[in-house]
Length: 374
Ligand SMILES: NC(=O)c1ccc[n+]([C@@H]2O[C@H](COP(=O)([O-])OP(=O)(O)OC[C@H]3O[C@@H](n4cnc5c(N)ncnc54)[C@H](O)[C@@H]3O)[C@@H](O)[C@H]2O)c1
Image (cartoon, rainbow, N blue to C red; front, side, top):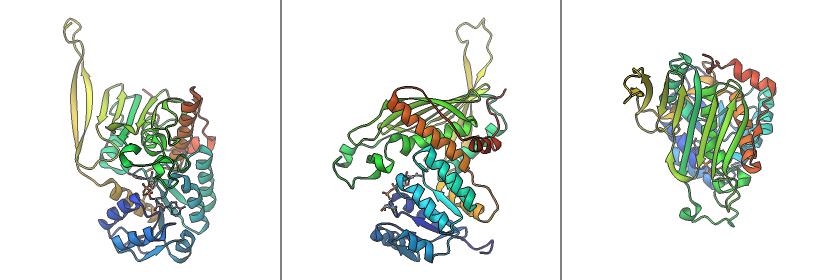
């Protein structure tokens, strides 16, 4: 592959999100090109290949991995299938994998991927496209420059209404969509809470030590449709996550800090131009008893961008050795242990400790700065 030729991609899973990646790739043809798709359902693979004009469609993942010469593979299947597909890819020689969120379902599974990545020399990255959006990279720059001072707490919400009754989904249907199946990784925590956990840990830049969760452990599908949780980080930052599939759309990020509070109104699927607000106090005289608290808002305009394209550009740079993945595997392992602890807390109705493997914690902290330090 010359530095100029597009990075050759294959995708496993030909459902909704594979189509989103396909649309994103079509807009940046000099950087990436899909050459193949595999799906357990051959008709789905054939339909996706036809929709985008991709060269090859397979009904068998192993065959695609054997026949195609791929620079990177995107895993776009149900969450419960990710671990085995990652294993299959690295064993077949794939060295760059972008795997959809939620990456895997337990800390032990995430640690297995960590070990696979090390033993095969593979780069394996969770597909949190929002982290590539300029609104988030601008916030990263502000945090790195300590523009808000010491971080105190972070609140991240992802809610939307996803009612089975409105979609006509029957709990007894064995082929119902994965979001309504506990065995495939459905439910609010795994589907959307994963974003909120990712944002809290990314901003805190610290190791979670314990969590407490509240909500509804299981509905008629055996999945949790509502979880609100607290994450206590080693540096004293507290993360607050809100994930619900029975409450209207929110995607708020709030970073509360010594020198101000940062708000991003809609944070994970940003389609249009947006604005980051930083609210700061104006010192007032205590003799002005009517208005002790006064604030001023700084508004930072963020241009429109397609986070899925930005994410694929990062994949291309990583394959070409020009860049590191924006979301590290260490961070994903930390977040998966946190997600599992939140799930346990919801069921047990008590606080749960989070125990991150020391090598992972070291790798994660090595790449982060202590944002709670004054
Ligand atoms: N980043 C985002 O904005 C976003 C949005 C939606 C979904 N997702 C993620 O994408 C993933 C897929 O979700 P979706 O809604 O596109 O699902 P989907 O049901 O629309 O499509 C999944 C496809 O994977 C195939 N598949 C399942 N297991 C397989 C296996 N072992 N081998 C080969 N093919 C297999 C299915 O046949 C199906 O065609 C999930 O992890 C989900 O969380 C991400």
